[in-house]
Structures are given as structure tokens and as C-alpha cells.
Length: 82
Image 1 (tube, rainbow, N blue to C red):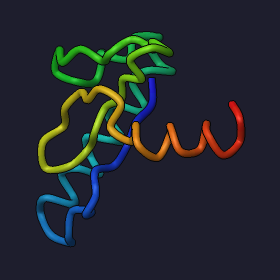
Image 2 (cartoon, rainbow, N blue to C red):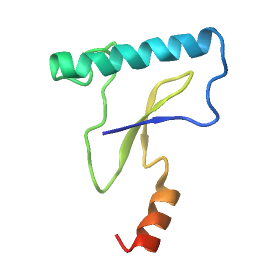
Image 3 (cartoon, rainbow, N blue to C red):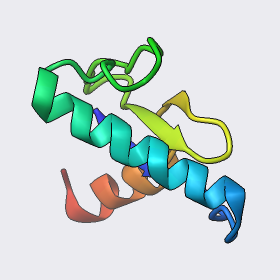
């Protein structure tokens, strides 16, 4: 499971502080409980899957995404031969 911060970033203000608080809560819950959904108000985290490349996008709305940087990943794989 990868965590990505959506682009463009959230600007300074209440949205940014709320995002930071949610990222800290979610990030702290996993090592404490072993459950990546423990700090997410029940929102499911997608499981790692090398075929789908799921991720969780953190922005004004926190949401799962399928291969959000797929174009960059495919280019990197092509150039590096991986």
C-alpha cells in the first residue's frame, strides 16, 4: 500500500491543518494496532496488489486510487528495464 499526496498540494489554512491531522492519525494507528484502517473512521485501505498498484490519495478528500502514477511508473519500468 502506497500513500500519495495528490498534486497540487493543499494550500495553507484549515484544510491543510485538517489534512496533516488525518495523516498523523492514520499513520500512527497502523503501527499501534497493526490495522491500517484503525485511524480512518472505517474507510478501507486498499491491499497491496502488484497488478493494480492501489494507493491512497491524501488531499481535501482522502480516497483510494488505482495506479495514480501509472504513466510515470510505466516509463520508469521501460527506461530501467524493470
